[in-house]
Length: 476
Image (tube, rainbow, N blue to C red; front, side, top):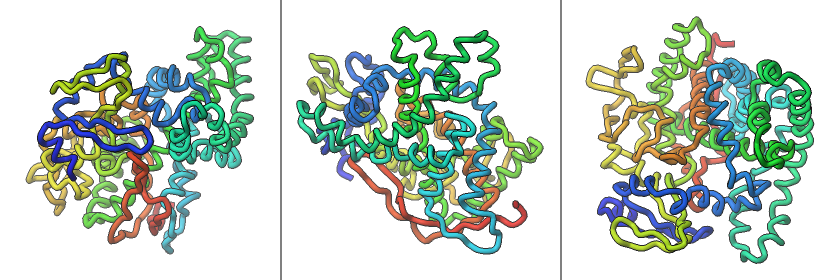
């Protein structure tokens, strides 16, 4: 690729972007300089706001400008992971068994993207809205459609002249608003009821007994917010809808890519066997119980998902900021960028650079496992890799770190202070989902996977492609 050549020669270059204008792409050596700039000079939030046309598509302008939901994620969700594993696993088991079936004799053809959508919308909503709403079919039907065409809708609004956007955007987003309003009719009474209970009771006692889900964390967090708007059921409901979209669709895309990457690999049977061994071994240590501690020890599982994120991901620009200083900014090499220009680093090319990752276009599920000629060390245990090729060792910093750790050579969740705060939750439920599938299902290998789909700088898996699956004998 021509842009890879520019980066290798430490030269910034410009990539066209149909929707948001040209992007200035910096060489990897300037990432730290990019991260060091204050948000008053370079803003990642403004990139997201402009790319998603968030003032019109995200239900309320405050949602992107004042990221209350990010604070809730950092303060509550990350601390609750070990207590949520049982609930997540219960929902995963129910939904995967229903979607993929329990037949141990005959193969079943499944649309991977659609089945992961069914499974993960219920599973992740178990944490966000709790029971029984996470199993309400009508609610889930509308929930998954609130931002179903978000990128397309944002693209249309982006092409509208600025003066006409306030007039035309409500018509362009009308279908999303319809689906949101249906969901809100289910969610707002729940929020209102909990708020009334909190206000009329001893708050310390009620918080201790309250449901352990996002709705409750958001209520607790916003009770003291200075803006009355943020304390309203309407705003909590809107923030919930945006969080559902962001958290769930990225997980669906990732799981779909992982399954296709594995099934199409020439090493599929070897990988599947070794992953199954890892899950079996760790479950045996925990009396066959699914625990957060056990999930963190599944290093092969982690590496497998990380490799799919390296090769695909969700966006091709891992780190992108907008010049918001009115006087502009000067790059380390002296080039001046005026106000409004977007500047960043391409994660797609970095993560496919052979100087960082040997044989970068080949899927190597255990690329990020520590290995030597004797085998692979996974946590405190050593497992032999057999015939798996030793092309895994790349001279990148933090090569063997879990995929929640962002680096200058792995930016699937962006990098720096704006890295996705929900990546720890994503890692937990992605590894649980893959572990359950590996342990309980067989997948028929495929000769090759269908290519990724692109929309400007966004990447998606094949939406209609299928795999043949069958329940593993002795697991029903």
